[in-house]
Length: 261
Image (tube, rainbow, N blue to C red):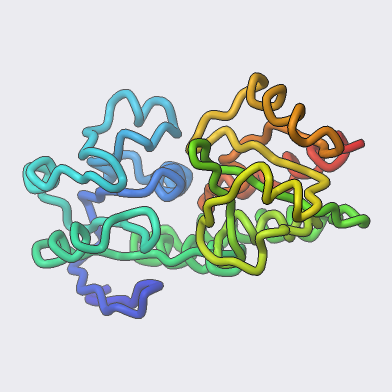
């Protein structure tokens, strides 16, 4: 495969199948593992916690937004896999001057499946990628969204509180569950307040496990200010990781929906 086009519409020039891959995105690192690219993957970020064995043994090249170029140069990759949202544009452009960089752009389930197929193609793992996509599609077809569509807020950060707008993957997963995102008229990750959440009539407040690690104590703090709102802790990986973890997301969502009062 001499060249391919990534999700940004960029032409990426490749030689043979990549033998030294660096992943700059946690959910896509987990996808590489699922596709059987143990030997080929030589570098990951410090946030690539799945699989645990890779997290403990693979070379870490910094974070998703503070990449260490000198470590990448030492690894001499022939493919770097990045993401429009999770990585810094300037850093990626600098790396692209030296190495083939394939950039994903994921904001809903359809683009996530497209990403999986694209990475499967450029790494010579088309068959397992297609199989994974089939499993994910079947799982979501079996997910029945909640019928009463509760007015919902999904918090990803504290001090200040930040939520998810309509052009995010999180919003897409909320829709799959049947949640009415009360911040769906906004984009990216707007800052909000408890007062605004209350004024907008939030019926269900979801506190994510990442990137901010919300805990039970935060439920107690917020419940005092939002007495009429159901507040739950949720596993943020199932709402925001758009790689192979999607095969387990429908099952998690079904349990979440069944737990609602």
